[in-house]
Image (cartoon, rainbow, N blue to C red; front, side):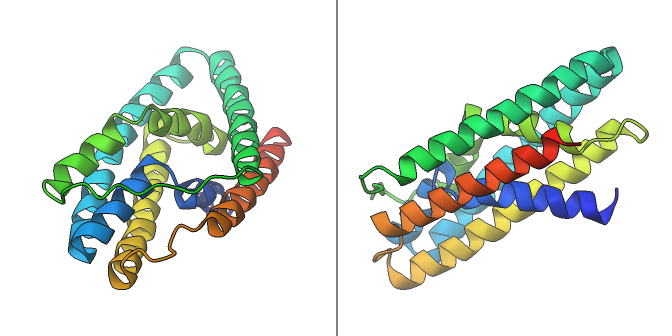
Length: 203
């Protein structure tokens, strides 16, 4: 795959990964309650969950492309529409009041809990099917391309959540998710997704 495609894919998924959601809040809460080690175990579990999502997405997208290029194109536009929808939700949330709540649940079984958090998160699978098709080229092996992109997604999830685990574990969660920071992250992520959707539509 071309480096430009990989860079654009990274630029598209990073805002989503960095936006507070179930996975991030779970990792942060475990890091705050049990320290960085608990957060790192949670991160490993989340990444394992997304490996399962990756495999399912790679097989599903490959089957769709093989069955009907027209259906694949329809899936691409559904994905663009979904990105716009996500951007709208993030921007609207950034303009609203309300702080994020971190749970102080017991820090046991973080690996299993993290795995289930990612695996049972329907948004995770939808993001795969919304974003991956935008970066696939029918001239090459679709399963291979999907696997490479999925591996990049899991890598960045692991990287971001590892940094989060270390940071929250070190500072004890104080001020890590203030309302002001939430608004900045969500507003910025929403704007980047609008740009990404526009670039994809123009392909």
